[in-house]
Amino acid sequence: MNHDHPTFREVNAAEALALSREGYRVIDVREQSEWDAGHIADATLLPLADVTSRIAEVVPEKDTPLLLHCAVGGRSARAAGWLFELGYTDVVSMKAPLSHWKEQGGTWEEPKQLLTPAQLRRYSRHVLIPEVGQEGQRNLLDAKVLLIGAGGLGSPIALYLAASGVGTIGFVDDDVVDESNLQRQVLHGVDRIGMLKVDSAEITIRGLNPETTVVKHVERLDAGNVERLIGGYDVIVDGTDNFDTRYVLNDAAVAARKPVVHGSIYRWDGQVTTFMPFEGPCYRCMYPTQPPDELAPACSVAGVLGVLPGIVGMLQANEVLKLLLGVGETLSGRLLMLDALGTTFDEVRIWRDPACPACGEGVAQAVEPGARVAAGA
Amino acid sequence: MSTVRIPPVLRENTGGSRSVDVSGSTVAEALDDLFARHPALRDRVTEDGELSRFINVYVNDRDVRYRDGLATAIAADDTIILLPAMAGGAR
Image 1 (tube, each protein chain N blue to C red):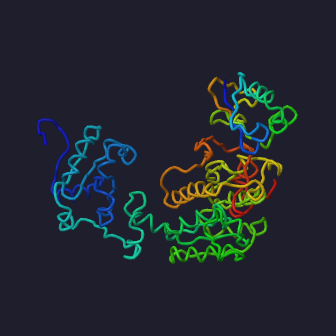
Image 2: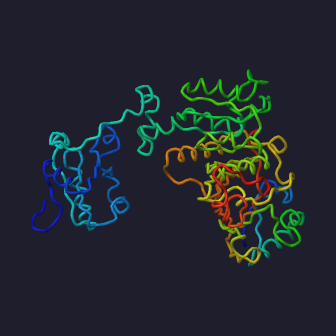
């Protein structure tokens, strides 16, 4: 430390404790995994690698008194130097092991045991990711996702969400497995032909991850049951095969403020987006009017490449995981279009329509939570 | 020249082409050129001279409904995307 010029200060644990009691904001510059093993109770985690890029967002006022610490004082000294250069005027680094802080009676939060040892093993590759960690994995295990359809899109989505540890997966599907489904509907197999798709899905998912609860809704989604069906879920995944259902689902999900991850497929082409009620556009904002049938044939008429629901479904599953973890940027307000024949992705912006009958101006205030906009309104 | 991306449900009207190069300084002129090359597309994309309500039209990533509609100006190298809703999914 250069004492010829004013810069940051280094203090011992007793001095650090006194400063924190005076109101110094405590910043922990260690890694997520170290933080997860226990941390100062009122500290904010800002790992060394993120300090310069995220400090303005975490501490906007540059005259805020800051107390930085790491495990022993090396990383926090580096971070303190950087912050001083960025214009933070009162920066202190604790040059002492964290054990001294605890011995001095400093506040300490023991790690919360969010996952069992078995879960820590099974989901270890998730726990290692900073954006997931134990807390994120706990969120996934507590999450409930509803898949409309246990077919082409529902199959890969369900497989990967179950493998990822999503705790509850509901299926709405009243169909049975047909031989022609097996070219793409990878939840099912030849020994399941004639079986209800939800029953086949349950068998497959139980084998993949017994921890995932499968809820079977053997019915077709319609205006009469939609509110009940979506009510208990955090995120809805739309893999339906017709426009009526998509509009019914949209209106109910907007009214109940549930995010809908939308996917559609046709031969070599796919579309994906995420609808966040009242934050971004909804399905009616994007397609205000239902197209005639000849413009919108189903897979059974037009055909679909076997891997296409896999590609589109994985993009949808990724959106679901980000929503459940609260990380990253979703496709809200963007429609991603895949052309598998050229292997190209295009993206267009979609906007909230002020005149939208489901989520336009006035609707947010007028509609009580749980109430539903009439289909076709 | 600008490029019009032809969605899969309309490719039967373009002999299977996935994109068509057109000239014109507005969306209307570009579409007129497109219809001159592929006349069957006119009735699928427009209704009474207006854009069909069933098809969204984008210039690059912007919906022309939120710009100047058919009068939206286009430049060479712009991409016009015709986008009807797709239904396929579960079954």
